[in-house]
Amino acid sequence: MRYLAAHAQHIGARRYQQDSLGLADPLNRTFMAHGGFLAVLCDGMGGMEHGDVASETAVRTFLDAYAHKTPGESIPAALERSARAANQQVIEAALKLGLKEGVGTTLVAAALHSGSLYFISVGDSAVYHVRGGELIMVNRPHVFANLLDQAADRGQISRSEAARHPERESLTSFIGIHDLQEIDRNLEPRPVAAGETVLLASDGMFKTLEAPEILACLSGHPQSWPQNLVWRTLDRRHPAQDNVTVVSITPDSGALGEWAPQPPHTTPMAPPEAVPAAAVPEKRWVLAAVFLLLMAAAFSGLWYFSAR
Image (cartoon, rainbow, N blue to C red):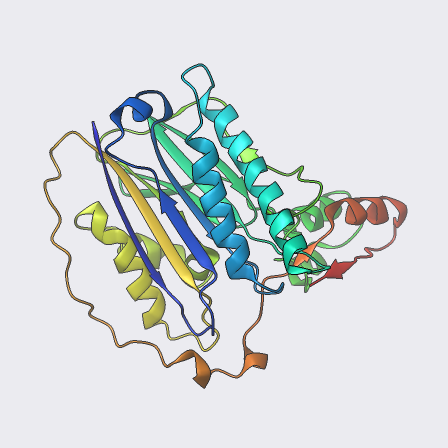
């Protein structure tokens, strides 16, 4: 079984590219026999300084840590160990930079091995499984919306209040946090057949495109999908377009053939300098433990604390 990988990326309307990605060496057959084919994507948090440093550090550390997997270590265990190693290195990078508030990044990674998908996720980037024309998000974003919806279930706030809350999309977990507790991963293998595809995406794509638009891009050779999705995102010409990155991995038994990249069909976005800084919203994070304590204490309302 071979793995066809592809990726595409654009800075959007931002001044800096804070998304980073990495792929395992597809020629290392000995390692792939027990570790599978690995891809990782990190989206640096623009609300903190040096989001690019955080994402690059996390990707590099994650790949290096996963490369030390032994045949006796399970893939889920290796993924979690690598995520925690990345978390520690990002914290240390912040200390070296003298940043009191630290630096942060989301992280999603997928390892395909023997017809199965194993993933790990911290933050709000996405892991999708594409099969039979269906797009399935397999990870759960770590955002404050989860706590808001739980508060609504308990009757502490209304559904409309939960839906309209200004911190709904703020992160409750990320790489670079000192107490990393929220990690999403699968322990049981998720079957992925030849010809099906796993997509990793930063929120610059899936928070810009609606589901039908994403599905419309998933035609033709799977290795064309990342570029199709980036082009479609840019075609929306959102004035505050976030960095956008998409990675695809497709197990192939040889039926898909080779993919010939096509030239861009869209007009490039205006230079980042054309977008006022105030018009560009940044990714924010929240302290979930504090929220939980305050929500438990405040039956009649919802208090919150946030930091950028």
